[in-house]
Length: 169
Length: 329
Image (tube, rainbow over the protein chains, first blue to last red):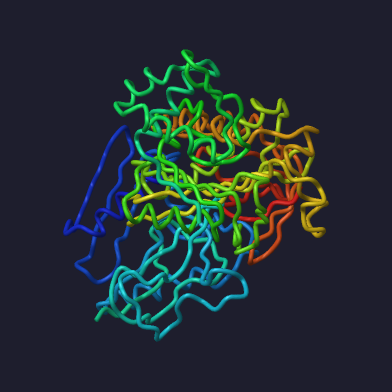
């Protein structure tokens, strides 16, 4: 099973009302369980086949091994607990649709698209994600107010990684 | 401002002249094929003349195209175009701020896949990080292609590598020069940049609305026509080849290669494209420097992943996956 497929599964199950999901094929077993809307989806990949399971567990934790250029930072792992805490409130998460570099502003000298406290509409551009000179303007997709910016300018973000928390109106 | 969204009649007329391949077609035949009067045919011929086409009209033989202007109008691009859909709808303007902006607007309004936006001059052409792309009148190819690929958004970056391969193939076909590709999609000749590609994606989290591929190709500039600060790093095809290149021919070749590779990609995925890309890649196995907003890293470029991501091995033999950076060779 590919990392992409596991990510896709997590995303689909996250969005669905499914509380528990088990998939078994060719000695690979994936087991996901949502503890009743308290914490975010926890993906447990049982290492039935080590090869398949190992990269998956590495990848599921955002940032661990794929941060390319920046020196290894200590700050990043702290993001996860923060998200979990916020998850209990009814905040909208704007997530990254692809792996790439997060840009808070259209150019290095320009002010950021949005900052904490800004009101956004569904079509407000909140950031750009770049991969291989393909630029993706991310829209808020909800009316509300930016409560938190979860990533730094220039940081590598993973597929599905939360970028902003928005308090919907 | 001269701008054209072409009529179907004009498109058919150009197809007829394309098939005739420089030979005469009678006025009678043209009017039959187009389903219009001979006076209407004459009007279209006059418009082509105004655009700089040289047409010979001989009694009993009909019309033939003797010479095309070196323009990048829809008429000139479609004369001899062999694609199915790419470039079959062309939006041409003499001068624009950026073809990318117009393509974005057209895509939003529902333009078909394969629609091409092209201009003789861009006043605000741009590259990565909002850097300026110098695009003076009549010298290069400044164009944007609209695609609507049925692929997940996270795969879209692969299209930028695909585009680089198509342009490299077209340059090779037209000029006999084998260019290099620098990750992800800069095209260099003798170490100097002659093509830049910048792509923009409009998508929902799970569905692509459009991918706009912006291409800037330095074709007929002389070295003096480049701003001094980039003369050491930029070049044009004619500087390298030592002769003028007919832009419309290169555009036709690019569109054809792009369409073929795109079809292959949709059917077989990125793997075949990756092999072609590696054939042109200049940096693989060499030491490179990758610069990003957050830092600089030096190492050996090992190659690209099946997703097109650059693999860089640092001094400590650790492999880093690079999704976006300025690469210095």
